[in-house]
Length: 446
Ligand code: NAD
Image (cartoon, rainbow, N blue to C red; front, side, top):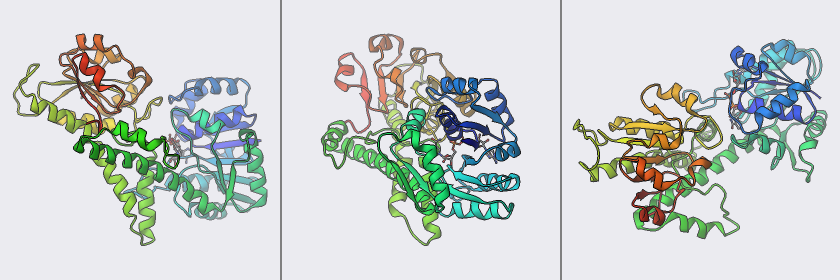
């Protein structure tokens, strides 16, 4: 099939590449000329495992091309995906400007029957708005379909190629048939294409993300209760997870959720409900717990050094809790295997360490270029995890990259100025570390 993708970001690029890999003829369009120039030159603007290899292969077979030309993208394809951003607007509601602008341009350049598939995460009712905008621009026949995306950054190719389910919100039998054909190669193990009305499809995406965010806030709240009671969240989590009704997935305590989806989607759902006169008490609590959670690690670090004031290195006496202290940070991206820094908890944590007077030395396997745009020269970036530890009074683990899971603790102890580990992801075993002479703090771990 001939497919165009409007918006070549994390979702658009993965969608386009995977559809090209499954044999379709795909063109990815974006308004950002720099991005398209890079892609055309074989430079991949984002880090996503396996993506570069797939792009190279599909480009070589001429099944994947890139353009900034909307007219070309619309005219040559019969299926057009909208995968532009839907960032939060002023009151938290999703900003639909990019989606509706893309829809208007699609309408302007239509030259025959097209299926316009909305992959961006959009509030219930947006599909109808897209329909109306296109209707105002063209006399050609078309169908609008909602097809929300559930991929996870860091495992996006696997998620797209082997989806748990594919949600299609559509009314037109013609569009449903074509969408089924398009996705048939991805669902060879049983029919997991769920066809429903457009509003329900749009809502499915928000409800799914709200559920996942709720699980994270729930376990974080339990972790905080555990630490105040002297219980251990790790044991509690295991005790809960074997119950099949609960399970283990998404029940890891940590430093709060971030990224470009959960925070904005929970906010947008709160706002959508508010517009209907509804007060979504639970979702508001999920958000509030998450905001509070982002402060847990830095509060722990500050409390530790207040308690051990005067110990260790060069206090410069400016009165701030972390004055003269150097904190090493492992992991900056909002989750492992991505360079995405959008709404990353590391931003909140590091800013609060800096406000408390600390010097911060950080390392992330792939997100340092993105992080430099945010922190500029306010923190130091080190070439690897061990390098961050030089002269550090403590280590804060923020993102659970695999390479941070089993480090050489003996070597670390030699490099560090103070042997204290603040484990924001509960990666390590307290007993082992204490035996080696470290002071250990985890989340909800007594
Ligand atoms: P992104 O910011 O990485 O990419 C959006 C792209 O759209 C940008 O490259 C931008 O230049 C381009 N764009 C904006 N307006 C355009 C226009 N009029 N014409 C052509 N291109 C245009 O965003 P993303 O992370 O890929 O997210 C896209 C959508 O998918 C959002 O609604 C998001 O909520 C949703 N989503 C994201 C993820 C994820 O993990 N990132 C997962 C599922 C769903």
